[in-house]
Structure formats: C-alpha cells, structure tokens
Length: 333
Image 1: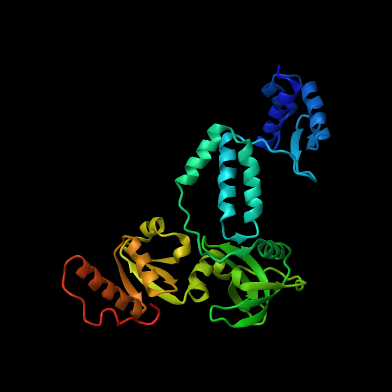
Image 2: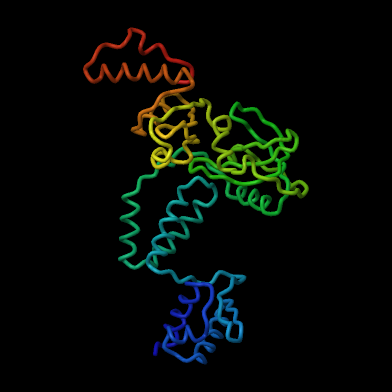
C-alpha cells in the first residue's frame, strides 16, 4: 500500500485525468479499500480541493473548480505542452500576457526534471518564430469583447481604419476570429445595418457597453469564410485574385487559412483571393507556394511579376533587362 502523501498525489492525478470516478474504481487503481478512498477525499477537501461526491450505484467522485487554484498534476506530455505554450505566449500577439507568461514559465522550469527540461529546450531551439512585427492586441480588450459576445451586449468603440480615418461605431459583436496573424471582430454595425469586420488592434472600446441584443444568424452561414472573403478590403492595401493550376484539395494542404480564401474552379484548378501591403511581398508569397498560377487581378501584380522574371533571367545568365527596369515601378511596390 502506498504511503498517505504519495497516495493523495496519485488520487489527485486520477481525478484530474477524467471527469468522474466511482469509489470502487479508485480503490482498485490505488490498491486500497473504498473506506480509505472516502478518507482521502476528506483530506483533499481540507487541502482546498473541491471534490464533489454523489452516493448510490450511479454516483462517484468529481473534482470541481474552487475559489483558488490548487496545484495541478501534469504528466510528461502535458508538462512539455504547457511549457511550450507559455514560451509562445511570452512572445505572442496578445499584449499584456508576455510578462505573466515569463513568470509562470520561470516557476515551471524550476520544477522540471532534467529529462523534460532537455525536451522543452530541444523543441524550442528547433523552432523558428516569424511572429515579429505583428500588431499586438491588448489582452483586456480581447477579454472584454469575448464577454460582450457571450452576454449579447452591444459595444461602443472608436475605430481607426487603414486609411487613418477615425470613426465611432455601435456594434453587436458576433465572434472574435484569429487568423494566425491578426485578431478580428466580426460584428453587426447598427448604424450601417450591415455586417462589418474590425481589426482588434485598431479599435478602442468605450465604457459602458450598450444594450443587450438578440443574436443574428452569422453572415453567409460561416463567419470564418465571411471574414476571409472580405479580409482583402479589411486588411490588405492590395487585393489579388490568382488562379492556381491545382485542385482546391491540393491548395488547401499548401496554403495557410490566414493567407486568403480558396474557391474551387474546376477539377484541375481553383482561385485564391489574397492580398498584401506591397506588390513585392505578394509576389514573394505566391512564388513560395511552388505552384503554377495565373494572375487574374490586379494588372499591377502581373506587371511586377514580369519585371521579376526579367531580373531573374538576367541573374541566371540570360538576356539583359530593359534599360528602365529599375525605374518602372508600379504603385504599391
């Protein structure tokens, strides 16, 4: 039989591993009697854990949420996942949680056995983040918006669009959407009587919230597709439509969801609706896909690609580019 302190830790780990256990199941796992299990449950309650119990054949024990956070017992895989998540949060796109994440990570790493510390460090050193330069979003703003979505409360906000124009809006928040690069709020704009998308890093909430509202059906039946369909006008200065010469199923595997919206065209091709802030960045992204494509719009993108093709041909030892090759730059490059 395990010593009491060790048994309590084992019992706590079992309670945290699934929603409910019967007394007989726990007794069998721990190699004790059901009476010992009942006594151990009382010890856990004295330590601050909220353990709920129900009598009878269908009853059992369940670990509930308490007023204070008691120590958690994690297995190796869970510990590695939490450590990596904290490291990611420490340099993520949500402002205000970086410093608490660093503090929590420091506490966790002090407790890690060497085998887990080596695993976490190996995974971290093998991972490269390209999140630098992404607009930070205040964690309190995200929390406030999420609460308004949950409670069906209108929001009053000041919004700065990509042209730098400031407006005051009254909206019915529907969903927060994270594309992997930016946070968006999809909401019904009461004054414009239409759905709108707002970059969260460009808005400032006013207090208090507005009146409660009755939720509407999501736009186009799918808020994610609606966002990606309209994200060109919401986030990108240059919008583009590109025909990819592969089936849409192939494109889905190669292109991240935040890059744009994919539309099936036929069994051999599809259309990517995407965009960027500079022609050169957009051309580089399309080239990185390693897929054959045809630019449908805008003409400036096709022109930019022809200039790049001439430049690359010269770099590879081909013919010389036009004399004005470095001066003929379309707007947006």
